[in-house]
Each structure stands twice: as structure tokens, then as C-alpha cells.
Image: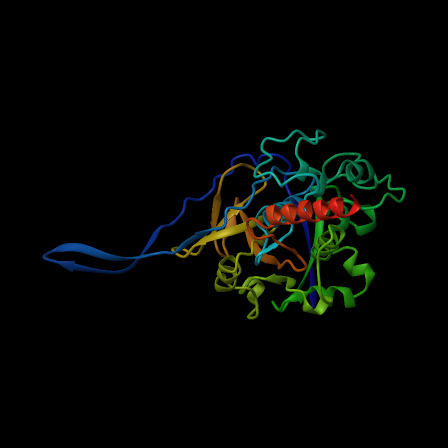
Length: 324
């Protein structure tokens, strides 16, 4: 069976939000010597990929997806470049503090473009039945992800993600086989569509490592995504979208001690953290979206551009002499 999850996230800074501190060590044993208590602590491994932090921009899910695209735009993946994910210039590291209705940063246009807002976000946060879409070509994550669109049954700023209720992976190819009435309403599938729109993606749908999955134990499932799975993604250089009930965020690191996720939450700047499988600002974690890029461009080796220019100059010089 499959489960539909609709994200409705809070606009702006969430009042009363407190980010939990890192846990750098955990007590694993205790004893007493000469009447004094002693304890042994296990030092945890901490990994931080250093992803961009973006202010909420017309939906938490396209904002979290924008941070993911911004990360790959800036850093590439497996030695390949993905610099067209944010057209015009390199993705910014931060968009705090943003002003709604004012596109101050390049990356804001890929999260939710001016056209998207004009077409689908006319009556404000959580409104519905306010679309004025007349066929504009989609050009942003919020467009492709179905965010705020009456046709996808999403109120303004909300996005739909689907999951198998047994905890198994709902892959990109599974989403497609369910038909357009499902994949056109899928935030995960829309991320792939934007990725292709930007000029990337190679291989068939079944070859993509892109999927939604409930975390292990949510609703007592035994097949879900675990903290070890999350660590493996981060160790491989891949950021992960983190879903809590009602909100999407971007995970970009971990601290083994206490099973802490390091994340950007779309609400406030700075690195935040939460315990794997726990709650964030009172919202329970239930799932993830995993996205591995494909189809990137080779990165020139240092000096290659100079050699190429020198070669072209030399070639032009030869042609000039022949013409003379």
C-alpha cells in the first residue's frame, strides 16, 4: 500500500524554534573506584558536508529541494559538474533574510520563480482555488513539484510526497508506473523533472537512485530507512531531504554520538540538529527523499583551459600564415 503525505510548512521564522545542540559524546559504561563514580564515554564521528542555507521561499519542500540543487551546483558530484542547476551564476550559500515578492538571489528563481508565484500563489499562504495558470512553461522546482497548485490538490505552500506504508523504497520508476495522476502530484518526481529541465539526468528511470522512504519504525514498519542508511548517503557526498510531519528540511551531516542529524530547516540561519527518528520543533520525523545526481559534465583539469586557448591561438597563427 502507498501513503500520501502532504507537507504544509510555516512561512518565515517559526516562533519559539529551539535547535538542539550537538551531542559530542555518549556515556557507555560507569563504575566506582575508591568510592568515586567514573564513566567511560564514546566519542562520536561528526561529518558536515556544508550545504547552503535558504530562507523559506513559497513552500518548505521547494526550498529544501533548492538547497539540495544549490549544494550540487556549488560542489558537483563524483568529479562531475552540475553548474547549470542554478542558471546565471553559482548558487548562493545563504538567502537569509529574504523578502517575499523580491527576488534578491539567483537561487530563489529555481525554488519558486516569479511566474510560479503569479500563476499559483495569488491569495497567500494556505489559500486554494486561486490559480491563474494559462500555460506558461514550467521553470522552477515549485512548478515541477506541484507546490501550491489546485490541479495537484495542494493548497498554497504545500507539496505532496507519496510513500509505501510498509517502509520500502518508492522509487522514481515506481512513481512513473502509477501514472500521471500520481507522478504529476509527486514532489519527488518533480525534483527529477526540474533536474532534467536543467539539462541533467542520464539512464532510464529504473537506473536512478531517487526515492521516497519512511524511516524504520514509523507506524511500526520494519523496512524503512535507518540512521545507518542516512550516514551512508552523507559519507558518499549526497545530501538528503528530511521530512517531519508538516515540514521538509535538508540534512547535510551527522554526529554519531546521539544519532544527530545536522540540517538546515528553512526557518532560521545556522546549522541545526535533531535526533534521528525524533521530533523537530514538535514535528515527528517520518521519512526521507534520496536523490543521487547523474549526467553531470566533466570538470576540466587545472590548466586545461590555458592549454586549449594556447592551442587555438597556435592554430589560428598557422592558418594566418598559410593564408598569407
